[in-house]
Image 1 (tube, rainbow, N blue to C red):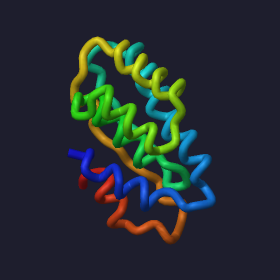
Image 2: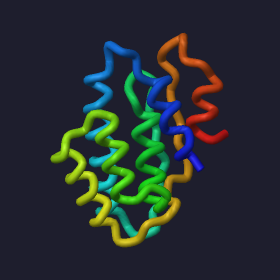
Image 3: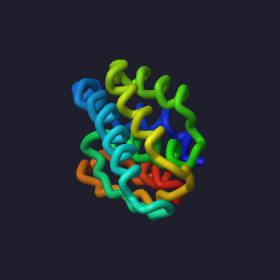
Length: 130
């Protein structure tokens, strides 16, 4: 459901001067969330809270789609590579995914704190699916 918004989220949430920082967040955040997910009780629901100063919208949407099974290993690697992650970071994310015993739609809510005045409200409605 959120998957078709990933490209738009990447384009809207990252300015040119933040590209390098954004790449590291796309590598770090989904990877950290995937590894943490493997430590949660099976079936545990999650609520993700982010802001508009980095790439939380893309990272959280990617994570939610991966743990729901809508994005498979290869596609996860392709997306992370396209967003600037190196092979080591991609391997770490895939290891985190493999460590999750049961996939499922476990992200109940993604919400964002708007810190920049120029962020369009319609962008966040699209990002959260509301």
